[in-house]
Length: 417
Image 1 (tube, rainbow, N blue to C red):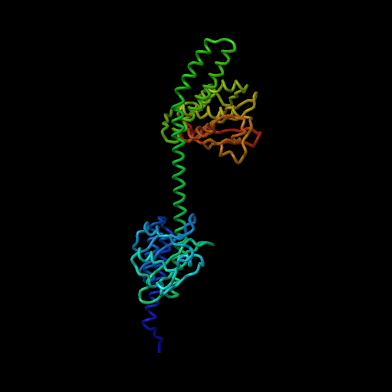
Image 2 (cartoon, rainbow, N blue to C red; image 1 turned 90 degrees about the vertical axis):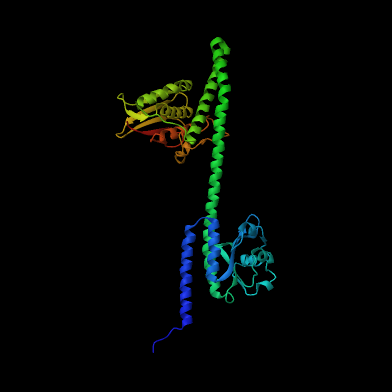
């Protein structure tokens, strides 16, 4: 005679298979959903369905104000629920959280830890309750509860199912919270950058008028004055010119940050661009007794670039070389044809760059020297602007150095015309 399986066993087997399948589906959905509100609703709905109970709720731990709060509950307003404080001591959920153990109560109303305020709020008379901790690694992030089992008391199988749901839920909620925190931090950074950009634009605009007046009067004084007074006027004019260059840099950085800088490419030789840049800084190079050495062939090497913007990029590289070179040294400006691209460089024999800082020197306002003890001026945006101008034209810029005291070479690769 063959073994016969009774109807009850078949139903139990089919029920277990459905529960396992539903748990797998829940796991997949939780891992693909990062919206915290949607996650909470999905968890409570699934727990209610699988345990065949009237309602489920999620209580999360508030680290800033040590207590539990309702994050979600079946058929309830989460914002109103969140207003109900649930103490760690003296409450059912607090007991589950503290002991990190499941709790089954098949006569919840008679338990002194029962919180009647919650029952009144969700309009459900809590008769039976099952609660399990929500663990993640070595800590507990909250409690998952199910109330009023239909057709009898909560069983060990219910405890196992709700524990599995709670474990998956804890990981999903933690991931969603991390994403939420990351987004908030990103928005704060964006807001801070916007404030900084607005300040740069405003300062650059507002300082130009008084600076123009200073340069105008200094020019008149320089022309009419003699002797020591002429020297003073010359110093004022030099300082004002340097400040004007700083304002130009601030304005250019703002344009780059807002993507408002327009490029007007044209065919021009890289040698001409480098000569234009050298002409703009030769006065400052002479003040430090620095010699400019050109290392490139006479045959023109054509590039397709915005002449003004590319010249500005090399002016910034040359100013950087002048600032960090010792008096009486030399700066090499070179270029070479490399097939489909053109390589240009500015090489100095100055203080050099630590190998681990070769990328950081292009960051906004970055200074190699500590701000309170540095010996070299500048805002730390010249290289940032140069990088932005070169990359906006499909080029590439990078720094090379053997370390402190070994000088530095800034190389630029541009598309060949």
